[in-house]
Length: 189
Image 1 (tube, helix red, strand yellow):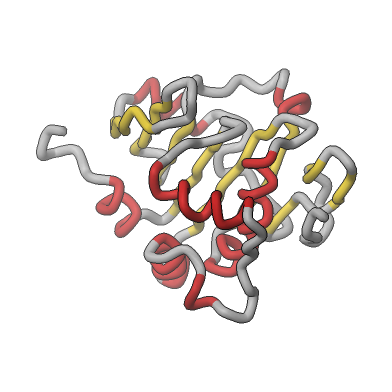
Image 2: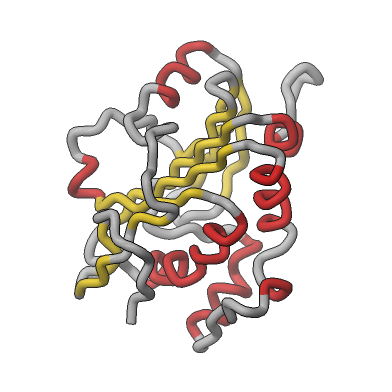
């Protein structure tokens, strides 16, 4: 990466807003292999034991939000939700507690939304951090750009930077899993 292109950490450290869009139904990134296996074996985060939550990520989010930045995440999910989405949903209260605003959108409701082809982070409507994945969900790396067309595409995506309302919109638990509704958080069974 050329020296004039900031790193993800640089962008997070200085941003006023960070919007993350996730569109895959599963990710096979190395750092989640252990936690996902633990979750499948029955482990659940204890809401009263913040020290055991995903570190250092949540510390980064908490620090970013505490200096006044807004960090938002939107997840587009297929229904019925799969095991990996239930894993993400079960741990999302930790993201919310750290200060992220998180919402879920059923994929059927995204059919008429023009979205980029890859997951991304958008920083201050100036920089895009693309996340590239293989078909199996493994990471193929990142790409950071201030290309005006990429920034425009991500900043105009209807989910990017839109007001969320509640800290976590996904609480109606139904047989198909989390739904976008505006209610308070309830854990799926």
